[in-house]
Length: 219
Image (tube, rainbow, N blue to C red; front, top):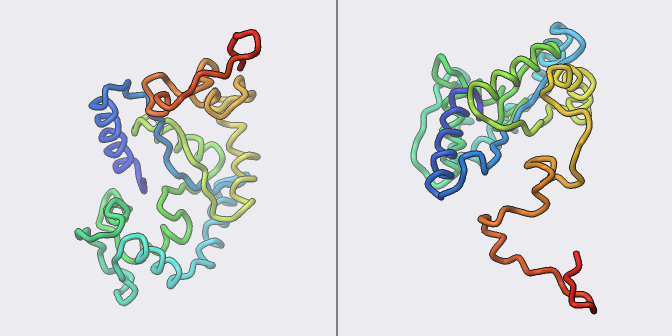
């Protein structure tokens, strides 16, 4: 989602569908893409952002936009507003790009800047504390469960996030320092969730463990 308002509405719709399916609303973990641009200070982060913007390819960004949405805006002025239309491309992508700004209509230039840095997700520029604050706000205000950290540069974005932001989040008790489980599922849902829940679709396909020579099932 490009901003908190869009994310909040998306989370609401997903939770409603999960409830209609007869499952607990927290049975589905909702993760949003997020590009953090940070440094040791806010000023350093802003310098990075301006440097990244200098490498944005207008043609490349608009080509991606056209491929995702089915709409070619390459011939329009940078200040031309983007409006939603019905077509056979990724409709949610086009709808989200029309909502890049919460206080005004999105323009072609907004699309270029957004795709050039963050792709389809949100981005934030600031000090480690400011990035941590933004992430807290997203969780508290939208109901998401976590973030898929994307990058402006690799491995630079990830390294800066780990070096600067993760320690702040750990100090606030928002990121764990040690993993309790042995698998991704256990760390995501809890150490008592080695397999998907009994109501999960995959449980219907689950076969009992093979029996040993003694007749006792083995794991």
